[in-house]
Image 1 (cartoon, rainbow, N blue to C red):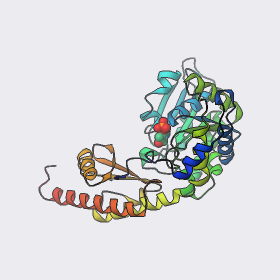
Image 2: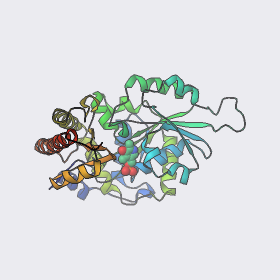
Image 3: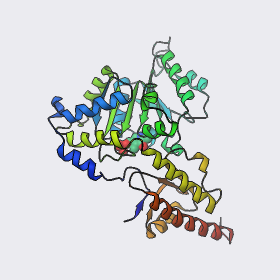
Image 4: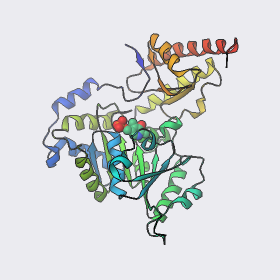
Amino acid sequence: MAIDLRSDTVTRPTADMRRVMAEAEVGDDVYGEDPSVRALEEYAAGLLGHEAAVFVPSGTMGNFCALRASAEIGTEVIADAEAHIVTYELGGLAALGGVQTRTLPGLAGPLDLAELAAQIRPRSAPKTYNMVPTSVVAVENTQARAGGRIWPLDRLERLRAITDDAGVVLHCDGARIWNAAVGLGVEPRRLGQLFGTLSVCLSKGLGAPVGSLVVGDAEHIDRARVWRKRLGGGMRQAGVLAAAGLYALRHHLDRLADDHRHAAELAATLADAAPGRVEPKLVETNMIFVAVRDAESFAARAAARGVLVGTAGPTSLRLLTHLDVGDDDIRTAGDVLARLLAAEAVHATAGDPR
Ligand SMILES: *Cc1c(COP(=O)(O)O)cnc(C)c1O
């Protein structure tokens, strides 16, 4: 089978995970009667240091429900210009939520946080009638389009102080919050408690087949639950899925360190083979960006040799390590990709038309 580095979403449930799914106690979760869903929600809330959580089918729905639980119609969410909610969620906040997104380049860094503070338009401030009030500042941790970079803790703490002062909610798109916690070597709650709400994913690095959670205080989660149902995300005997998620949280969190080690190894191999194409210092978690001449054709050549890679732009590859990629796979993928990169470099120096 091909070594699939396109995304950390491609993992399949393990045999043990399938067993707990098969044995899960279930009920009707729209009635609040699915014990496995409840167990997952309670566990996740506790893990992240919050009061409550709600299980949702996807991270996109999680972000929407969390943000819409804080942001009324006609208000704005401030986010990084490269954020997933801005780039990859089909404009849902605007299309379905009546909420505007204002993007700031470099929110995750290097934007000066004092500058961000000056951009927030608190509802409580004396304002002219036509100003759009800010309801939420949303960050992404880890930040996908920055290569899985981790927000420095001190920057997050300063940001939380700023949003508290302004009376706006600090939300985290935490699809990969688990990678951030493992990468920093802190308990997830240390990160969780810095946010008013979070959306966290069970089906990426953790390897569950489906699902995300919105986490926060009881009031926000009640509102998020209403939005979930309104969007058609109320699920019935969802315990079979929740059981997989709970298993993943209990058993697959610490092993993310292996994914990070694999990414570092692969980045080092590729940097050796083709200096300047990969910056190993920027590889903080499970994601590697590689500069190539033509991403689509490179990906096709790699696929023909049994390694699937993602593209992040016309000249950029994105590789992710995950649960279904082992030590040997990393060595094999390193060999294949290093050879292709080296061939490209030779080609480039020998009369490349660029
Ligand atoms: C994957 C992802 C999401 C959305 O997840 P889906 O389950 O695919 O909807 C949100 N934010 C980030 C940063 C992601 O990587």
